[in-house]
Length: 345
Image 1 (cartoon, one colour):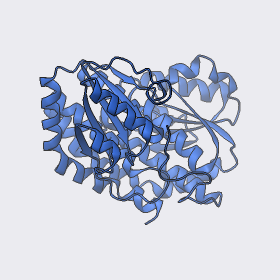
Image 2 (tube, helix red, strand yellow):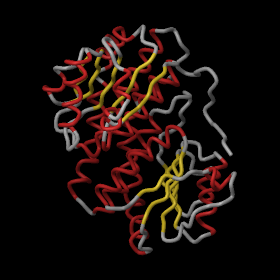
Image 3 (cartoon, helix red, strand yellow):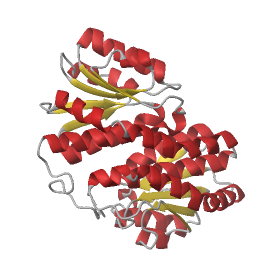
Image 4 (tube, helix red, strand yellow):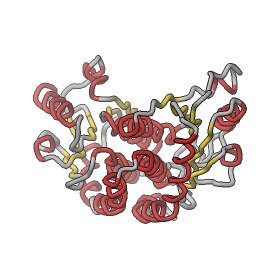
């Protein structure tokens, strides 16, 4: 099975995940309410850390739950963990094997915190150490670059948020996600053509905000992993606080700008980048106005709710990185210097 195969499995994976894990998620959220959890302490690395950024936004906005991102070295190197009383220690890991993430969970249990793991390996050390496990059920992922396990992690977090909200509209939104993903997978031919505009680039920035702050970081990470480019991710607000100075005519900028609360700010930035800086701008959006500023517009599905858009918007970004790696003659399955499981302490 190839990386492309794994990208194209995502709609099916998400459909099955909702079907098989929803009742389990309801049970977990019942316990979260009973234990009167005050905040979530989140531990992850790499791609899973980017999924954690999405957790921060969806649980914060939709459920009013603060999410703090862990610094695992406090536990594994400095041996000075913070107070985790009344928290949910949430770990996210494709493999469930990284010792420093497992140590965060074990310390949480020692302090009496509730622990929950989102992982693709329900028999892993991380799962064994946790009180509860949501099996993201992405199936075997052979390619080093995570794709279907990432969207399954996002979807699991979205299920958790919808369940905590007890919101029927949010559940209906979840049911639509597999179809939205199927729609963006049809963009492969377009994306394969677009990458030719960026063949010679050596560096770029990726911009998102709000829910899609996570998408910016994950897209940039995939660019680094698969194409060996220098790719930096920013929120549109942070980008204006200095990094915009690096842009000039032809500089590659990638932007994730679906409809929603942050869209006006992204529209304003796209206009400025195109009119003042003349950058080479690729935009993912469902809005005609902002796509007018893009040399390489990629249209997201109409009616895509903002809160679930990161699960969908990352898919054309994955296709872009795959196509660019192929165009450059790189190994899409085994990028240099990387392995599927990375053990950090």
